[in-house]
Length: 136
Image (cartoon, rainbow, N blue to C red):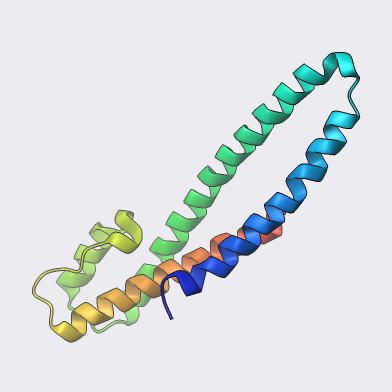
């Protein structure tokens, strides 16, 4: 299984979890502040929400990049691909799932490359979702 059915449930579950936590947290913060400081409290709350969102995306990008590279290296070590093809895939691993299949491969080998990239990306996505679940 690949594509949206593999990652959509995790994204939806994460979105529901975040959505259900934000409104009560904002209500608790804003109700604990005197009316005279509500504007400043709202600004601080919004700033912190934006900052933590950016920080989370940055950290998850690091987790996903490292996980993808480690998983791809492990799978390439077990694959039957030619050494030159492996080197080309490693050289283009920064493109993650969009890494191009090296030229000169058979149809079966090109299929194997696609399968390797799919498995590496989905394994990596699961790692990112698990990281989100642990941090929540």
